Image (cartoon, rainbow, N blue to C red; front, top):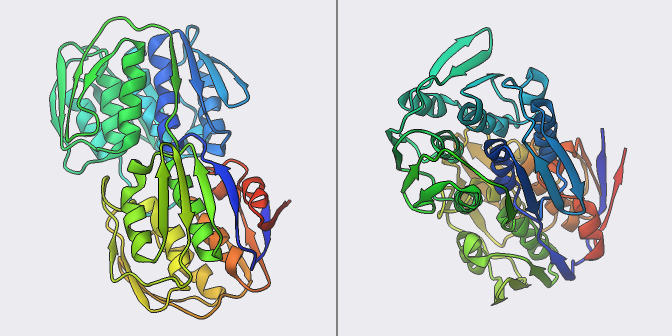
Length: 417
């Protein structure tokens, strides 16, 4: 088990590149099963969740190798239809492999997925949609067996714009007979990136980024080369680090339109931004201003993944801020850890009230999940004294060697086993 040791109080300054998006590359890796050929994926970050996805692909029979930030996947010899339980338990997004395996082989067997404990995240929407596509589903002893003898198109309305369900439908319907229509689909940029990748293989999909997506089933796919979009939550985290330490940071390889909801909130906090193409310069506020209320929402609203890092910033605001978490029930686990550092936060159900304090103090804290762990790193950069963040394996799920990039910006942070 690894931990971060952070000596706070050093303003971050300099330039940092934002790596490829975790939440885009994971469904794309699952999608490589579809074409039964060669896939070249550029700007693929070396994350713990990516490593878990590679392990699943290799178990299925794919040949995978990495050269720098480029991943090569040859799925021509993939033969397995089952994902072993130990691999499924490593991350919740592994459920996205179901749609691809079903589409390719007509059958998939797996256990229920794992990942961060953020409250109930049932896969009922996925299974309901699968049944509408003609897939028979049997659940027994923690395992799910999906069989598609007659995979056909359907009109599918999602009760909630679930990103995972939208992606799974896109994958499963890519080979289905006819044209599948998803209404109330998720609009996230990662959905658009998956559409672009799939269309690059020969799929026929339109509408990603809107509430209605159409997938015309095709019979053949071909080799593809694709570059993953920048990670908007990693960009947000770097901006949070800059804001809380009071240092000017320049981000490269950032798509500012993907984080407009975050930029809007940070402008209210007193931040200024200069944007030129894929480069963003952040001028942090001299005094962090509070925000009356931030409500997490599906894209294009304020992202739930950005809630934790921004909450860390607001612990030092000159006043009271409120977060309302509308996506996950258990997304405030980092609050207890921030309180150890001197933060004044009260939680009532899905609402957190943050009263800004004069200073944070270094303490020994524990990363309970991916984004909560990132929030503790953000807080530690500004805290007086030393902060020890334990169990940073959670952080490694979404940030590629975070400590190295922060060190280049002037942070005093190191990893210790």
